[in-house]
Image 1 (cartoon, rainbow, N blue to C red):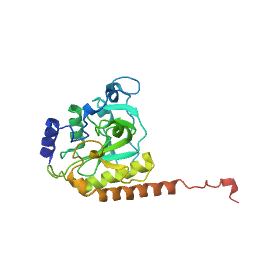
Image 2: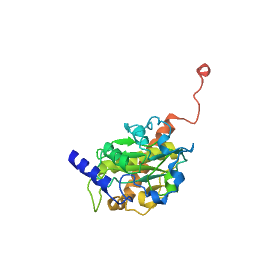
Image 3: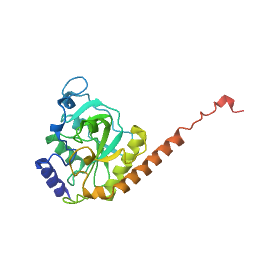
Image 4: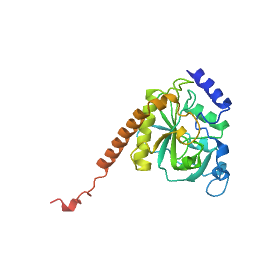
Length: 238
């Protein structure tokens, strides 16, 4: 298994087509201003990152390691959508980072073959992910490890289901809108690429339904934790 990961990292780094792969961006289509933070400095000098999201599953923290590559813009934007990608490889979380150390790209999250989640970019910041300025500003990008390679680029059930669950959490906790066809996208919504692959295109309806189930779960949990009425003060219990 590890040999596959190593081979796929090498292949991803060597792949000349930057329209596909882990968070790959067509940098030629983006204005120069996208590569500078809000203080006017180069993205490499951005602020030190803070903790990962307060998700109810463990989240591996790669935020500072990705920030050190300079391949992220430390400017915050209001997020209105989630975009799913595939790795174009059977990559581990570390393997994704190794690719991004070489290729000028990034995404907010990755979900590996076991369904585990890693975070690389703070949710409101601008990841170099979709090859489109508007998309990078307004969307949170989630990478997914592939189960098989070209031409189908399949993604395992455990991987895409956990990516959909994470998307549901992001819609509930960050975006504050239920996932739908108008805000849950694949990479090819934003730019010319096959990402997230033909297999994921075939199961989009299942992915959306899973994200909606997760959203409903997390919003229901919120309702239970945050009742509409305040508890009655103790001195009034008589």
